[in-house]
Length: 216
Image (cartoon, rainbow, N blue to C red; front, side, top):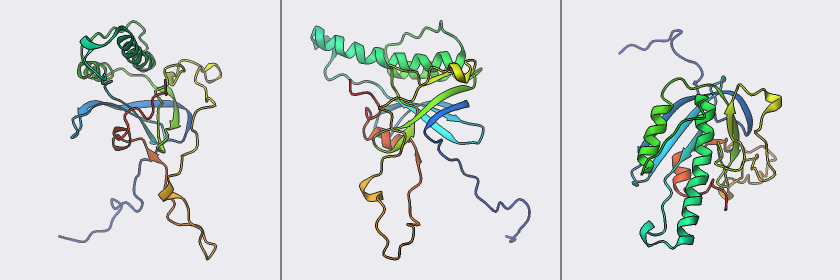
C-alpha cells in the first residue's frame, strides 16, 4: 500500500445536515422506501433534500387497533376509522404535491400494500415541493403529520400564496434533553460539546410511534 496525497484526498468531510425548522422551497424527494425493522415494526420512509444538500424525513407507521375489528363496538370502530382517515389526509397531501395528481386512488387491506403502492407511485416523475419542518417533543426534526393543516405543497403555488403556516403549537426550537443541558463552566468558556440538531430518524420515532401525531 502506498501513502498518497493528491487532489482526490478530501480535506473536509462532505456531510449532510438536517434542515432547519421553518418552510423550505424546492425540496426534492430522494428516497421512498418501505421496510420492516428488526423489532417487526413496518415503516414508510420518505427522505427529502434541498438544493444545499440538507435533508429531512417523513416517516409513517401502521395504526394498530387495541382489539380485533370484529369485536369492536360501533364507537370503537368509528374512532379507529377516524384515526385511519386522518392518516390518509396527510398522505394524500404528499401524493398531490409530489405527483400533481388529485385523482390517485389507493385501496388496500394492509399498511404493507399501502406503503408499497406509495413507494411505486413516488419512484418516478415526482416534482419539487415546498415543505414545513418542525421538531417533535423528542427533539427530532421532520415533516409533521398534522392532518388539519398543510405540511407539503407543490412549488407551482407561489410563495406569497402558500397555504403552509407556522402555527402556535409548532415546535420551532429544538427541545433540549436533560442530559444535553449545558453545564456552567467555571472558566467561563463556551461548552465545546454542544449537541447539533438531529434529523428525525427511525430510532427516535419507533420508541414512540405516535409522538408526532396530534393528541386527538
